[in-house]
Image (tube, rainbow, N blue to C red; front, side, top):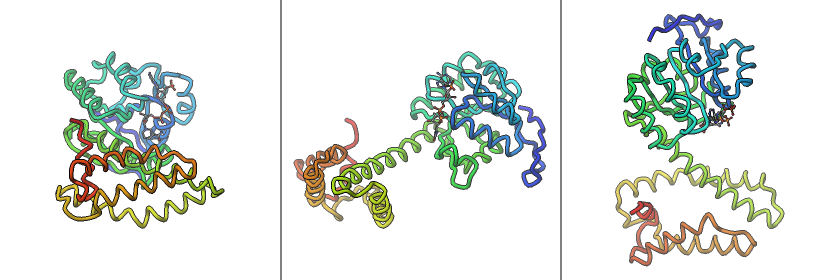
Length: 303
Ligand code: NAP
């Protein structure tokens, strides 16, 4: 790989290392934010998008609009892929494997861990330098101190592209298994959506007595802020697999049962809570009602 020297216009960002040239494949909300951030940090960028019209504002702002993926990759050291999903990534990378040799290909598209591993295996078969990434940020966060991106796969690929990756946000390398970044991304999003769905049910409950969701949001934020430090205690129990202490499954069954009843009394379904009660019922039915309720984590294993 031969980095092309493109001096930045921002003296704050100048250093002795030449900036790498970057191709951004995909100019949706996220790809556009990434391309803009790379331009702002003095990177020479080539952009490609399936719907070519979306390259126009980027060309006006200083990127080179490429008509094809191969054209975008040709002038670039690092190829960032920011498409919709696994299918679109494979559709557009497979025909140009030869053109991606000697580049660092970083796939920032959200995929599952096994999809990431599959693309990494495909890349290895073709002798490509490949890294999988997961973006723990929204487009407006890219390049700000709260932006974080996870990477996994070849360490050499991470190191080679680090200068570019560091401009997007904190760049955390998770390990050689290409699925690791995606797995952590999916685990964090799993906890996020279940937390948000809890808020949505709370808002529906409070709306039955005329309380606006915005007021419930403030209450939920305050309550969760107070209670979240308990995660560390739960984690210690789960890691030890010693469920002999703590809040019992039977106590928690009663608590969750009351929440479900209260919700229904207000005419609001408790669909998000019912699976948890079922798992607690299972613990009790198998003689483990006295165990710490976090023992439900053991029942999530698909047998
Ligand atoms: P988006 O605004 O919906 O843009 C989707 C992009 O994918 C567009 O460039 C679209 O091209 C392209 N695309 C869709 N299907 C395609 C296909 N079959 N072939 C080629 N290109 C195709 O999505 P986004 O927000 O930019 O998200 C891009 C990726 O970043 C996703 O994997 C998303 O999960 C991930 N991500 C996004 C966020 C976020 O907050 N937005 C946060 C974290 C991760 P056209 O313009 O031609 O339709």
